[in-house]
Amino acid sequence: MLKKLNRLSSSWIGRFVYHTLSFSFWLHRFSGSWTGTIIIVLSIIFFIAQAFVIPSGSMKRTLLIGDHLFVKKFAYGIPTPHIPFLEIPVLPDFDGDGHLLAGEGPKRGDIVVFRYPPNPSQHFVKRCVAVGGDRVMVINKVLYIKPHEGDAYVKQHYPPSKIVKIGEGLWVKNPYRDKFKGIQNDPTVQAPILLNFPETEVPQGEYFMMGDNRDHSNDSRFWGSVPYKFIEGTPWFIYFSWDKNYKIRWNRIGHFVDTIERDPSFIDPSVALGS
Image (cartoon, rainbow, N blue to C red; front, side):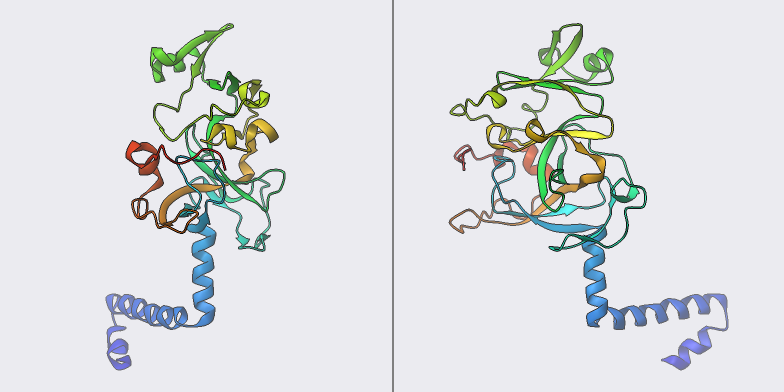
């Protein structure tokens, strides 16, 4: 085999084939070693996809406790890699934005995996309901947002049934509930902070997060918006799911989260909103 490769190397095509095959042989040997396997696995976790388990009910009935999913790590740039479980950064945060390569941040309505600002070693998953410059408030459990783009943008992008005038500007009432049927309120919960949340402007470069299970979610209403440096990615697809009785949810396995959140057939009304 090596003699054939040496004969091919006499032309530029031959040299190209020779080096390609040589690299393939090296890569095969490297990936078969323990060192190579560890490096490849960590590279996938750092830059492409990381396994994540939904631990709480804050995203019911969109994401359920026991959903095992992969997070798309490159959705909003490439976050600074951390050693799994130890949460030790592998590289310095060169630009102070938590990312090796910065990208466009989450959009309104995106489900986002991020580091919990009061304790960055913890990961949370919530829906982004407002971005930097937007104003947000809750009145009688109804979410209102005032997009920073202004009234003309509101009229162009939202139906009249969703637009209300409050004060001097136009606000959007419950902008996500019709599109994502998993967003729910629990009528048995009447805590004041969940009934009403005062008008707040989201700082530039930050994102206001809320759980779809609105009355059972520890989110931006309690600890503020999430800076871009804590954004990790977005849920990609579910590779396994079971309930608290270890009954496998076959109907959820193998589906993209984007499909699940938009298809009402995946929203099970029998799932209790409380813990």
